[in-house]
Image (cartoon, rainbow, N blue to C red; front, side, top):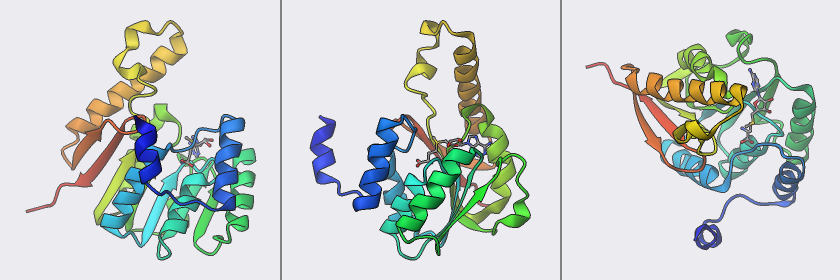
Amino acid sequence: MNNYFDDLNILPHNRIINEMKKFAKTNKVPIINDDGLTLMLTLVDLIKPKKFLEIGTAIGFCSVCIATYDNDVLIDTIERDEEMYLQAVNNIKLAKLDDRINIHHADALDFDLRNLESNYDMIFIDAAKAQYSKFFEKYESLLSDEGIIITDNLLFHGLVVNRSSIENRNLKALVSKIDYFNYWLKKNKKYETKFLNIGDGVAISRRVKKK
Ligand SMILES: C[S@@+](CC[C@H](N)C(=O)[O-])C[C@H]1O[C@@H](n2cnc3c(N)ncnc32)[C@H](O)[C@@H]1O
């Protein structure tokens, strides 16, 4: 069923993007899936972001896709793992996007916000799932008034709705944290959030306007 839409939706593709996708598959690097990317590009079409911030770069796949899709967007992206960071630097260079994608090698939770811009139109949180509320609370101050925060993997491979089947204690604790985050986000009165059953579960949060 899904393959049918895969044929119809044209996602950014070129030699570098195809190689990144292949590398991620072979090396089991978690990158945004086609459904998630399709949603992200739809949001880019609607919001027309000037500035995009990504927490969790991995090999730079999502950033490269977005910057390839939209020639006007400037991206900041943060990655803590050195190997991933170096791969991303190389991929961004090969894609000739180093003038528009600014990659920072840091733990996003310790990162000094003065190294970033302000007023990001889109913030994509896609790093350690157990820390989502901390990322959200830290980076929301950089969101533009009309901006949105996107959080991914909120179903965690379907395990969030099937917790009783999990035997591993650490995995159970992680999944409980994601479930906690989902309800924390729902209750967060500063934002209006839509939870979507797309990809691995995505939330889109927009700041509630002051009247
Ligand atoms: C799911 S991958 C990101 C995929 C990427 N957004 C994409 O779709 O192409 C998550 C990445 O977040 C990084 N990460 C996890 N916790 C982090 C943190 N506290 N600060 C920065 N990066 C972090 C991991 O090293 C990993 O490479």
